[in-house]
Image (cartoon, rainbow, N blue to C red; front, top):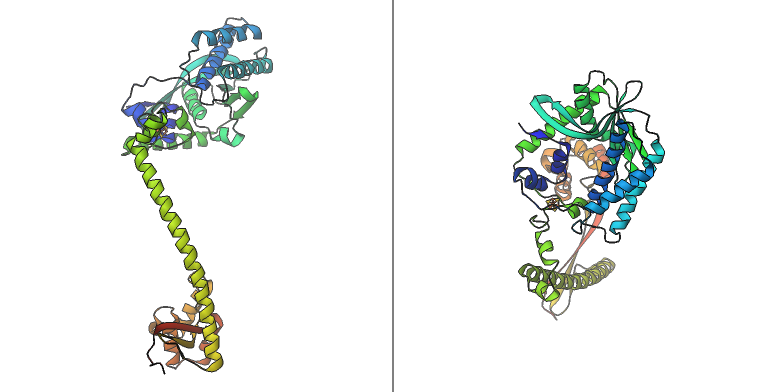
Length: 408
Ligand code: SF4
């Protein structure tokens, strides 16, 4: 049975396709570190040194730790490390790491608040249905009063809020593992050090929350193991993904990005997309112009029709003829039925049902209603109720056809 890790679960949640490339296809990518991961790794190494030396009663001065960090930076840095944010240099990132270490040092010196039980310590978590999960805690510690602490060091440039850490899954899963391993770990605090902000966030979980977490984690594992498709999911994380050159969302942009303008234009995909964009733009231009002309004509038609109705009313006409055409003006009335989303429509249906008219009308339609009401037999009270909801409004219809009467 697969042993899961928190990052394995998160990879699936963030992008199922990346999960497939990494854990199912096990593609061996020449993974280049991002500068953020590189800097974070060295800050973690420095924290490890701090607490490891402390376990041998050696308290490093801040300058010693910074010297260690700088030396490791110089040893490990290569130009292969990716800097996605081009406005910052490697030196900027190195400076962020130094500030993280300095702030943490001044905040917690002399580091005697707790006893360290483990640094980069493995934790194994047994989950229901025989599932297992494994992880590494940056530091496991115990307070003098016996409370356990799981510490996590973060160098991220994003500071989460309390609700975010209260929902965090990783350390809560580690708490389950710690409580399975140590009988006296009845109380556990989860602690995140957001070192770039000199902020410490703390969360605690009760047994019910931990049981719910176990169930939701097992459900996520079930989804992963029964997944039929692994679609790509585009997000800000794509900038740091090592599979861009094979991912269907990024393969083409990645291929054509380095091409010179002449080569770029020759690419078959580029040519087709350009053609399509041009055709769509032309179509839209024609549509806009036709729509604009039609709107203007429709407005004029409304005006002329309304003038014809006025003329017909004033002079008592039904047919108005010119040499080739005639206009017929039909004046009438219709029931103004409330629209489908109007609550009064239901009232109308109810009244028709109560009055035994529904079968004749069958649907709330003005003409059917009109025909049924005109056929008589409807009492005055019902008629009034219907008129209240669906008042009679005047209708006019103007139709233009070939002239039927011979011109004199
Ligand atoms: S580039 Fe983005 S969408 Fe494609 S596999 Fe990587 S994370 Fe997923």
